[in-house]
Length: 70
Image (cartoon, rainbow, N blue to C red; front, side, top):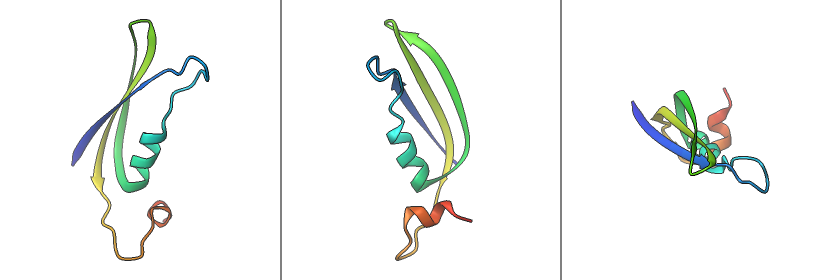
């Protein structure tokens, strides 16, 4: 089992967090658990996600979309 931490700062214009890196990570890995931590750093709302995961074996011709279906 492996762990990875993602940190996202609130985009004040959009009012959201850019979770693109997290979405891409989930497409390529088998997430076992995720824990969120919310805090304010220098006045900016911040989200940290700690993800426990395992690598998804890739066979030739397999795409990330097929890894999500089962």
